[in-house]
Image (cartoon, rainbow, N blue to C red; front, top):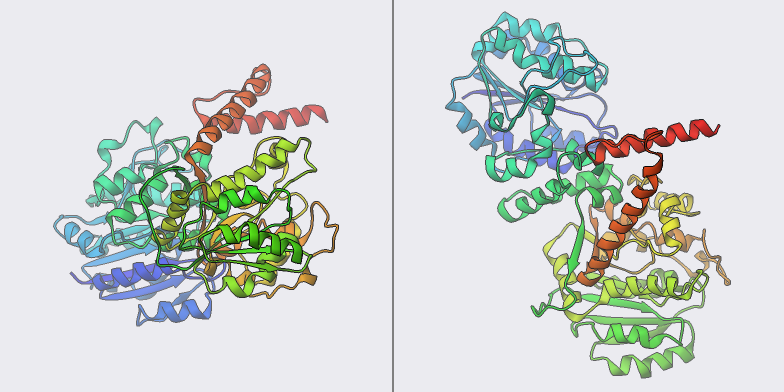
Amino acid sequence: MKRLGIFYCFDVNGIIDDYIYYMLEDICENLNELFIVTNGPLTQESIYKLSRYSDNEIYFRDDLGFDAGAWREVMSDIGFRNLSEFDEVILFNDAFFGPIYPFKEIFDKMDEEELDFWGITAHGEAPNSNNLCPYGYRPRHLQTYFLAFRQNILKSIEFKKYWINLPNYKTPADLAFKHEAVLTKHFEDLGFSWKAYVETEDLEESKQKAMNLYAYDMYNLVANRNLPVLKRKTFKLPREIHLRYNMASDLSDTLTYLKENSNYDISLIYKYLLRIMDPSHVADVLNLVKIIPKEQYAQYSSEKKVLIIVHLYYDDIWEYAFNYLKNVPQYIDILITTDTCEKKEFFEQNIAYNLKNNVNVIKIEPRGRDMASLLVGSSDIVKDYDYFCFMHDKKSSAKEYVTVGATFRDILWENNLASQSYIDEIIREFDNNPSLGIIVPPRIYHGTYFNDYITDYWSANFKQAREVLDQMGIVTPITKKFPPVSIGNCFWARYDALKPLFDLHWDYDDFPKEPMPGNGTVSHALERIYGYVAASEGYYTEFVMTDEYARSELFNNSYMFEVITNNIKPVTSKYFVYSRGFFGFVNSLRNGFAKIRQSLK
């Protein structure tokens, strides 16, 4: 079958991501000719790479009318009469990841169908929105990110009329209700036949219960109905939207399925998401957490070079650190830093001498504390390793109770170095997931740390964090809307994920003199940006915790949620309306608190 493809792309920064090149590489094997159109400028690198897939010049146009306006312009320029020289014309855009399996399988299956036009997925009949759809409701329709038209419809005057008369819609809602929801029924009413590659009509409920199965039943469609592509918009939605339809595990389950059952490289998805989303949001929407049993018996030894760096300042709690360092597998090297020659000698005799690992103890300058230990004292050593873990002793004596700071320290050490098999599993996690860059312990909620999380985990450090990222030329999204993915400065990392940070060649003078302020320094900013540095290199951050800690975390979070909701209940009749699900409840809270603020003015 002779096919023409018209591909639309748009990026606010003019960047074409690797997932698009993969998709074009595959689909071009099924096309005789390809036109590429973009609603805006592209980087020179993107232009060069895109040009490899088409002998035609790239169409550059203003950002008018979204993909439909771009397709209309290209088809008009080609000439609608000339389109009928092809057996099939494919209109597709950059709004999906894939294909999970070759497009050839899709085309081969649809070639067997006697149709005038087809798409990959369909949306069921649904209610109207603000009376935008001319039918008074949204008819069942093909989703327009991928449409295929055959000669019978291409030769029709109706096809030309539809596209020529299509305006440049200015809002996504207008495009969705006046074009996407209209196109299928418009041509169906004219007698043209259509079908979706992925059959979902049996899953579609009433108009009132309409939902985008493509977005919220993704795992089922991929695993059981051969859905070959994933809509990227679904990955950008906040967790509250997913909780309206499922347990918010659908996306992570889908990626796990792809990793285990397909040849599709899911790092292409991670790289795109980490470029345009806050890494904390990525971790949240993809459930990036690993719960590891503290005790298990499957030994694992990596071929990678691994280093654990420990900065020890307090000589009165060294045994605490030593008890955890005894868990470190023998194939992992250990580097201990401290600030005096006396401590160096003491740790050599009491820690290094009693461990079977290759242990090195070095003295560093007494400035910059743990952050200088990592970025100055250890920088020339850690670059020779593939993975490393950084730890430091911690007292947090300024907290209201000594146990609050001590528990923070416990969370950091226990969830990084709980046992030998636990550490083995962390190394295995890096080995098995090449897109994994950082592993961090869970966030802190107990004591007054809860107030920090509720108000602003960034505290007084957001501006300086942004300035350090700017120094590295990192444009990874960072907003105060999301808390930093790392805090406490104890973590595991792939060296390549943090290489831009080491490449700044830090010096002791870059850190404040003692006594160091309790907040707002470059050190406090640095401990919050590891995930953003990793994201700039295409690596995601994952939380890790022991099974024992996860048990407490589950009940703590359940308790805090219950207490909060119970305290809201007395004022629900006046300000809040409980809806059928979490999504409605959250929106009710927003509206209710807005009313409370207004009443207090």
